[in-house]
Image 1 (cartoon, one colour):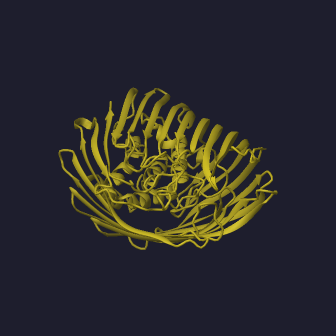
Image 2 (spheres, rainbow, N blue to C red; image 1 turned 90 degrees about the vertical axis):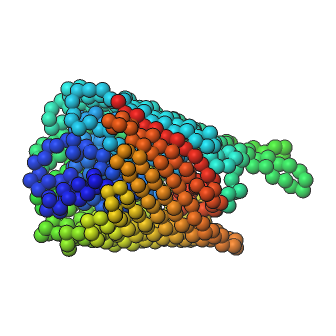
Length: 622
């Protein structure tokens, strides 16, 4: 709480400018700019407040790597913001100077199969960064052990020497899950290196390897609706090169090129019974693909106008082999080989224009040229419009209206701006989806210790579904409405209270197999955090959920209402050497039926533990 109050006071003394941004634009305090501000907001549970400061900072100065990292850290707490999180991380890495901060392997991975707070480390910066950048080595290790044979670890070793810095990391996580065939094992290895041949230029490269073995990880409203023998294996290798060069204080260029190799397999057996005759249908699919993404971006900044423009190109091919047979009839024996190539080119320009001292207009447009062989060939121009208005020193109003095309993304990352006036552009939609989004938000500092806000938005989607027996695609109309509000209160320096409300409605006129037609979810997350000066912290997170699901096809609506409580206790070791913690998910072992709102093509863990789960965690820094 003292750290947060210091931040808010610094912003006030700086003419209410966004965090990380000074009035004279002369700061070179890398320690302050590298500080773990995201961790401050995460520990307090004040992520919405952290996002507001991040959006203001990025729109004030799009070339500030610390502001992008602040957004990446706080996006980790929001569902369906995985593309935004890993993309903001990539932009932060490209813009950053040499530093000792380790690159945690899990940070660049989207859709990790980990329930929030159940992994070996937090997907955000931590407070163990050194106060000064100097030649040295650093080591950070984290681990988790818990029920359901949950086990994980993450170790990163980093160093900086002269004009060179590097980070070497390993991540492992495994769990049996909450039911039969719900297990998953995930391994990630990362090697990052950066060199600065001059004060205005830096070059970097990153090599990543990810391996996943899992059963049926999809969670549906009916807990019994799952496959007992479905198995998936996925191996991804990626190599990225990055560049940053500053021509002057006003002009900067960043570039990135990523190559990826994908090897994925799927197998499942469905057992049927026809008049007493058992029939087993087995399906085996194997996917191999190679793709790449090349992007370059120019950033111009001045006192009243910022411009961000860029171009990108994605290409690749996949070979999908599908084999199906039956036992004992052998009447379904088939094999199919498809080779769909895809290409995408995008151009964009975004601007932030300051009117007076309290009004900032966000404007721009993007052009997308997408071609998927035999499925889709479309060209679109997408307008972008947004507004930041601060009528008083304590009030921020945001407005936005824009259209976006969901395109293929290698490793789910892009350097194109991910938000317009704080409203996220890129969700985990089907590739080729066209989406309009409209939003209004108000964030208010009610007093030095009370903060509140309200956000309303709507998305109108046109979703392509490839035809199975001919070329082309059919299109469906989906609609989404989202509303959320928050209230944060810090009555003392040792206590933080939070309350929120979220409402989401999703309507689909055409759905994939086993999908829902309409989903309404009400959620009221509450929280209390206590911080003792000796380093002991206690956290309670009760949540109320009411959900109604309409699966269509004449089925009855399903609904459930429940309370679920998570609790945690942690201790910070002296001299900033680490943190020890114990977490209990679903403390009262509440029975939960919940339908995930994610796109059916992306499996994910539920928002809550489906049974009581004890976890022990540690983080050590040297």
